[in-house]
Image 1 (cartoon, rainbow, N blue to C red):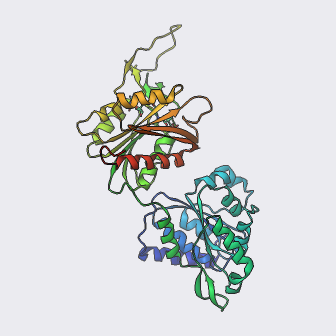
Image 2: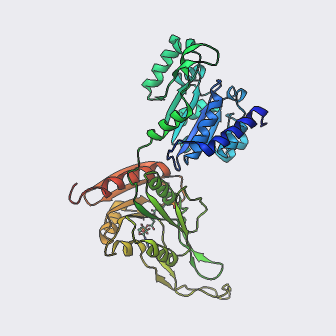
Image 3: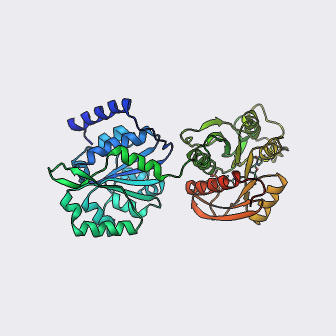
Length: 426
Ligand code: PMT
């Protein structure tokens, strides 16, 4: 990808504007897939990308081949920090993040500008390039900001396509009327990037947990046997990290106490890394005061070796026995505090999932528990997808198998419903 002189000056111009930009939006951690199709308004999308990044969103850009004739991909790469995708059959990109994965990654797909041709292809469900394929493959909402010559906009074919897209619940933002690049005056200008950014912001449900402090535990714990060996489990931390992100997106201030995992913390989260159950217990207890919500998704070891050998244990004997002692139960200790936060536990079970989970909920005095069927082909540990049965005092709901991030959003919605409910109101 080459940067043309025009792209170079566009980047400098946008960076300067970044210092004086006035739009105050909060899109912290939102995943925005920005599609750019081939119209003169494509250069305005660079400004849109800048505004979204400034507002805290993660932005990935997909351009049609025609769009790259108007703005170089390097402009978007420089603004978003991610390489821009265009082709459907790009092996390098597919290896890094496949197009289905990218479609699932998006919280919102925004196509700006959307040309008459792109609208026609979307209206007919075409999947002949990466952008149209992603639109078909995404579970997220799709917004378009049309931009074209006024005569093309007025054409009955475009209007029929618009109607189809509207029926299919596309969000249609604009166009505006005014002077056009071709000299015509009329309907068809893309609405301004700041206005699109505001519409993106408004399309996400507002923070139901604004000003609320929440703590999440995630991942496994490692219980040392000697300096090189430990007892661990298969938790990847994905579920807990997804919950932390969903809480942040509802406006909560989140502290994430993470066992040993290879994941990046969601933006805006305060992360505390620990290794063992004892360390996780200490980290939680140190910071629990003032937390209104506690979500325990970590797979904490119930037992640890009674003694940790100073040096590597040699294999001299034919067999060996490890004595294990109980670890503290972090969740139970938090729920037993004089003024406990709203406590949400997880229960990883292989059989009688709901029965065991309900027993844990009442025994540990929890407000809510997410029963997780683990083992076999059912998601749970280390999988991308998961399913939960969520139980609270007077209710329950099944959340079917889905991507862990979407599941976390659904769980956090339920937490918000119960957390804010006045006592006795069911
Ligand atoms: O990390 P992933 O790969 O995404 O997998 C997600 C998950 C399967 C680990 C997660 O969804 C899950 O089910 N977490 C809970 C696992 C578990 O250890 O459950 P449990 O039934 O053993 O514990 C019940 C509850 O008590 C849990 O909330 C646990 O965090 C908590 N606990 C348990 C023991 C202990 N010593 N301290 C605790 O706080």
